Image 1 (cartoon, one colour):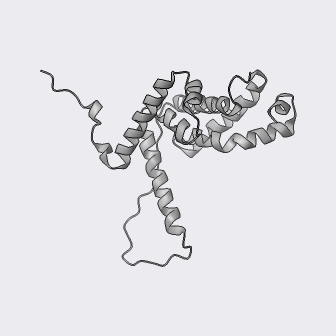
Image 2 (image 1 turned 180 degrees about the vertical axis):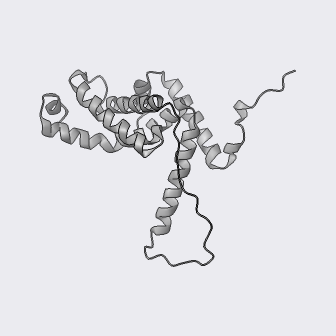
Image 3 (image 1 turned 90 degrees about the vertical axis):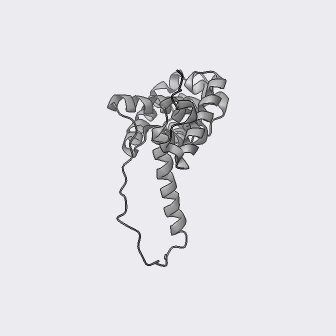
Length: 191
């Protein structure tokens, strides 16, 4: 399919892009922080993939190459807009005092999943850009360490370090410790 797309087969190109779009969008969403920015970045990434396809040399997997483009495009989108990722969500006015039976037995799990996703998005938005990108490429795009090193153009040890630190800070923030300074970030009391 890849070779056919590179040769100009529009159907093959369409199938190739559809096959990778969801993950490209997921990478953009987690890096950019908002759906609107992710939509813009994913669309631009797809355009860059199509334009760059004739120059794709095959030294890496197509998916690795596509995620590199998605990552760079999402970061470009953030820089272009001059802002960090921000999430906006409404806070409910209060808890109902009477429990209601749910028509859909899975509704409670779905609501909890949405709440968890919002918490993860907020925690990701607070991470340093290099940590956020490494964690997203590993945990959302499911790239291995070698592929992430290739996408980011950094040594594998740096990738492992960024992922470990990013995951640690995510865990701190998700457990409620995010309001405290990370032990490595605390000022020293050197006299």
